[in-house]
Length: 108
Image 1 (cartoon, one colour):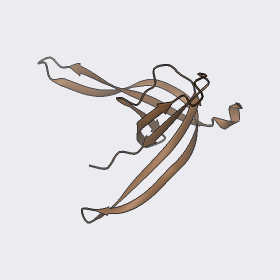
Image 2 (cartoon, rainbow, N blue to C red; image 1 turned 45 degrees about the horizontal axis):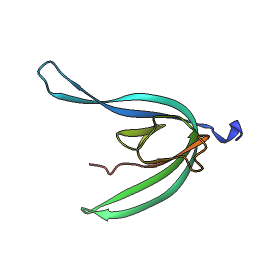
Image 3 (cartoon, rainbow, N blue to C red; image 1 turned 180 degrees about the horizontal axis):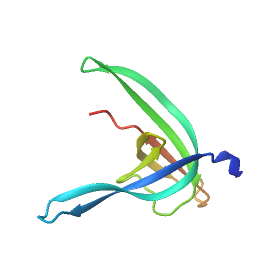
Image 4 (cartoon, rainbow, N blue to C red; image 1 turned 60 degrees about the vertical axis):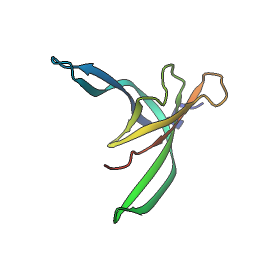
């Protein structure tokens, strides 16, 4: 596993929920880790929805293994892009690498 393979800097963020002074829940994204990763575009497609062209992009990131990374309430910030983590898999169960399959969320 050469260091040159991991040339993209990404942030992994976790959703945290706090309460304000009057008890309302406030959602905020906090940095969980900043790591080096390899990035590979998995797919890209455009489609028509609501009379507009929409795009869907998926990226696979490979990082060195890190405990605590999962697909529930976590996301990846990659440059200016924000991607939801769909899965976080240790492919050979040896705790050497972690493969994150991510997708840009649908625009609201």
